[in-house]
Image (cartoon, rainbow, N blue to C red):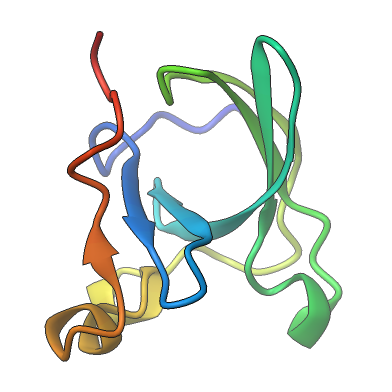
Length: 102
């Protein structure tokens, strides 16, 4: 989609399974695929709502492009954008060891 980023840079968290999650512009994404230069992310509502929203980042987690629009609006509630209640209870942790800006 061509909307302006209103939420700042993407935020990366690691869930208890060790999988990366990305929060960006009001949506939450799960990592789908990593190539030598691109990471593809799919909307976390993919299975619940059939959302086909996707985006791509480079390996430094900078947004390269949004591929498909979502079939639902972004949330203004931080707990809906990313499971912050899980983050706060220790189920998710910040991805401090990941290279975000190098």
